Amino acid sequence: MSVRQIIGLLLALVGGWLFWGGASTVNILVNRGSSLSDALLQPPTSLLRLLATGLILIGGLAVLAGKGMGRWFALVGILLFSLLAGLMILAGADSVMWADEAVISGVLWLLFLGLVITKRS
Image (cartoon, rainbow, N blue to C red):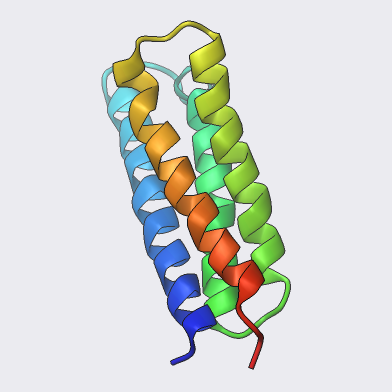
């Protein structure tokens, strides 16, 4: 297994874990009586999180499979996830709400940097 494939696996694992967390949150809100549209769009952080982490997951799996386009999916997902953290900060949310997203964004950027500087085999 090459370094790129290991990074792809890590991206897929982190993306899948984050996607599962976002989907679980939406599921809890719907089970408590909210409509699906309210759970996703009030505020739209759930929708943005699911979209971003889904792209990271797809990108990581594509990199793991050796597809060159995977890093672009991962990049778009990482940008959206970083945007999520930034919007939460700019909205004045308490640091407890956005600190995890900010730290995870940093980790995702480091993984993407690893993709950029390693050679394709």
